[in-house]
Image (tube, rainbow, N blue to C red; front, side):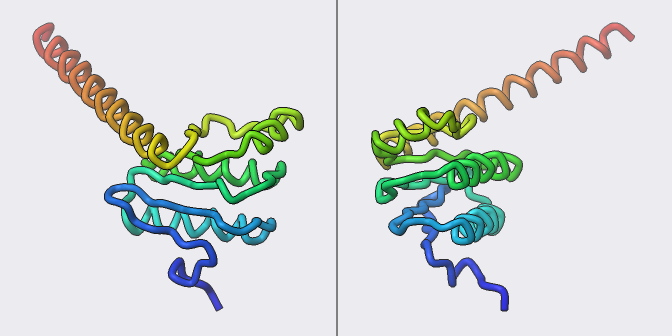
Amino acid sequence: MRRTTRDSIIPILKLGEFLLVSIQIDLHDRMAEQLQQDILERVSQTQARGVLIDISALEMVDSFISRILADTARMAATLDAEIVIVGMHPAVAITLVELGLSLGDVKTALNLDEGYTLLEELLKEREMGARTRQEEESTEESNDSDSD
């Protein structure tokens, strides 16, 4: 029987145009994979523009979990959503660096407030970039029509 996101062990809450995922239990591999799928399904269903993943309750993040988080962020980006991870303990950051692990281009913030602000800034930058590209395309089109 297939679970729905409503049956998810880790709740995914809608907060305006963002989703909030607060991981309050240690993740084993299968649970991390399920969480990845649940996040992506909720992003698609709600058309959320950003996801805050709170890992403040995690005492440890291993190579598999860090890869799942980084992959989830890349996958969410293909669905037009940004991910910010918040609440990483210093010990977790130290372990990731010592093991040579990386979260890739995933943005991080110290807490939920800073993460929310960072998501808003990332979305504004994206919108400004899209507007600039549209203006450049429009300028190119008018230049092309002028040269005809």
